[in-house]
Image (cartoon, helix red, strand yellow):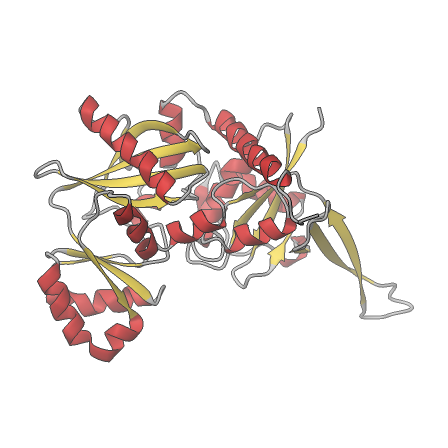
Length: 389
């Protein structure tokens, strides 16, 4: 059987660049070599697309064994300029290799060798803006390439937590009390906005960028005196800010989703951060995070949360995969939907993979399922008409 060529796109122009590298490394190392040929495609911090050579690919795979090997930049000589062509051709990827010319005839000059490359499926693993927000998915739609995960609409609304909250509310899903603040509103009258927040919400508060993940830019605010600094911190990453009331004695519960029209749910897991909340450092640098899988919940609580996870997935028109996060009040048991992550962390020790492993689906088989889902959706789209005659 011909192997499928899987383009694994990673890196990106966001503060989750290194997280994306780790996710891609795990996927490349665990794709079944008898079924797939992985093609790593790296997006540099400046937005340049490159195709690492084999030596760089081996470096990437070694990250799985030692995450400390994550490098911010690949050696320049190992990179080939790469472009995804936004037209529905069979060879969607163009690579440009700059090679030295004959020095005797053209000293100091280089020639460019252009090659085209076809991809059977793309696995977008760019976390955060310019990858998880529908922009990359839109480019893949234009190129007519099958891809894993949520579509353009689902990616965009899930990335923007403020818009996602509107959809969740419309579905009657339980929401944490919150307020959306734009940078211009804060600049015009920060004092008035802070007073309104104090009247509507209950301290402690959590202040976060609306369009980001991995808890980057998130601050816990104990009182009004800390609010301004937290807002300015969040604004370093986004012009739209979410301010939420803290949940008393909050328990962080997560559920993994897999599928399309009939999504499947995993067992539930609970994260027990060592700090005040599950921040960026705890997610990626805590060597011994305390995870409880399955979570210590009653069967009724488990079924309720799994049902809510499916409803949240459908509310954003999810497809393929997602991790749905909840906060459960340790004071009175009230459940709050936190967010839907359409490209969750994808290392073998990430919560998404661990939840499916505990549910009886291993990492290699999980990748197979995701590829099959991508091809199924693409096949359906190819049957749609694009002209009246």
